[in-house]
Length: 221
Length: 221
Picture: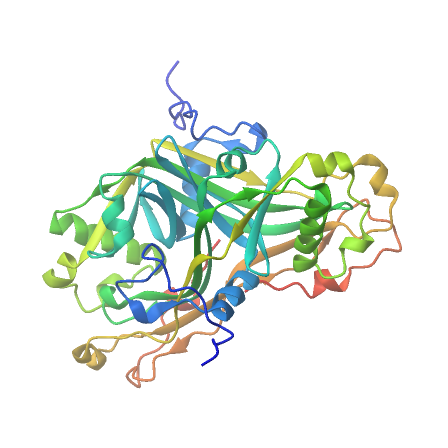
């Protein structure tokens, strides 16, 4: 039997969900979709034996995610060549049950573990940064003042393969204890999502420049 | 001279911002306000030398934050007595400059480092869980089916002091290279925020139960 197109390595013990295995997903489609739904991630590194968690942006190309920052960025320097964790999470709703215990949250999250590798080749860095800008703002890269060699040198980009990753998600309403359904308590889900507001143009924009589609059409989640 | 009410210990080297010190804040008001603005946090622990970052909820009472979960929760068990990192971050806006380099994000974040302590006393646990529910949904705790001793035993709560914490924030528009302001490129800020949608009542709610104010008035951010 040919392998399924979604076949992935069996999850490692580190990323396999143990307590609520039904919430765990390891197929590429689910993992990709969550990573592509939110640029925000939290990067974990270890410094002198202690964990440090820093928010930053991530983007995905194929079977890798990338993070970037200033060449002097402390987290990126610690992460270079080290085992790191990149976690992406989206809160989709608050779940209110009829007891404190049965409150929960609807969410989608991905945890990626592995060793980060710095990208040194300038053309590879340029291509990755273009992919990042385009993932957030389709069509914007070619409208920008081109990136300079100095800017490329000042930017560090780290790559992390999706070899060891798991997704976790919860959806649906509260699961209450049977006896509690008789109680006069409002239960349900309050959906939440990240929504864009009204674009705030820079006061120094030229007079004839209008808001581009990649701003008015921006979505997270 | 009496100490200022906002006096805090000088930031440790681990939490002090070095690269962009102007974005760093160490006063209690700023740190409290960010923690209180979002229940979502990312907890970092170290397992076999590698970092693991897990999304969960946090709440603050005084100079401590708390996280909770099932007594069998892997992250909480690793965190109990260990050095952990709790990071809260809010994305406030996307900053679009006239070059790739001058794109950024407006955000507020807090990083807390320290050793987590498990709360064992049942009455203390009950009080902490009440504070958590009330922080999310004011007035809800007393309307719920009371928490049982078994539920309390099945729940682990960890406490982390705010002794070693820093806040970081960026606000305002893009800071472009002077020559780039002459270019016909839309620059500015796209504000984003977490917004609640329409509450979805559980199909088994009793007929005369209406949506409470703590649901219709819910806010994050």
